[in-house]
Amino acid sequence: MMQSKIKPEDLAKKALSSLRAKFDPEHARQVQRYFKEEVKSYGLTAPEIRSLAGELYQTIKSEWRLEDAIRLCDILFPEPELEAKSVAALILVRYKRDLPKEFVTRVKEWLAANYLNNWASVDGFCPEVMGELLENYPELIEEIKTWTVHPNRWIKRASAVSFLKLSKKEEYLPTIYEIASRLFSVDDDLIEKATGWLLREAGKRDMGRLERFLLRHGPAIPRTTLRYAIERFDRKKRKELLMKTRS
Image (cartoon, rainbow, N blue to C red; front, side, top):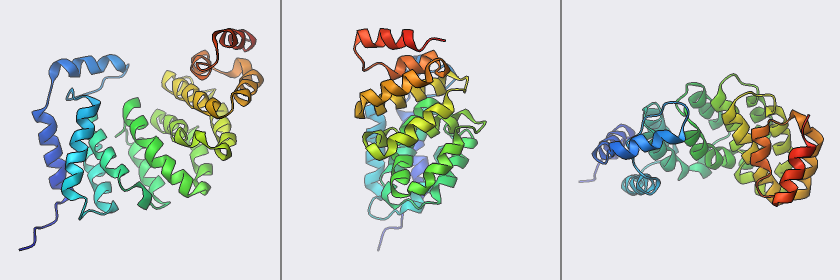
């Protein structure tokens, strides 16, 4: 008799049961130190989360399709604990090559609903999933540019970190610098740090271009963003850029 397909609801229950069984209250308290906003955690380490996601994937990889993985995210993303969101995201990433262009709407809905309501969840999901979408459907870039002015901070952060993996490719640099300049006016340390991170990654491709960009925008750049952006310059150049970009 053929075994019935594992439903997303059942895998979600299995995931939550496994996470609860591994609950480490001391490590969960330590996790909070990395966040200004309050987060809930089971206290698992990153390798433990990846291992659990891998184990769960092995049970469904022969029978699940993209829509099942999306349904799993619909169930686990609203869970308050970081690890539940991470497990769902790590399983969805296995299906990223099958994502249709319209999936960008679902991502925006999840972000707007604050299901990915911390920097770790956004950063663990968007570079892989949104990066794949943007590479496959470049026409979505104009849509993501509009995210820079969205009132939701996680959508704004996603507009930056979605391009992190694409920063290795020359053709995305103009968009990356435009995204960054659009975010300079946002008074939010999580956006400032994400923008600086994106600029630092873009600089790996062309340090001269990054330096010229920073000097051109100067005082408009939040100092937190600037400090992140210049981390790969040598000490003398960092000091010079900090001085030349002051108001």
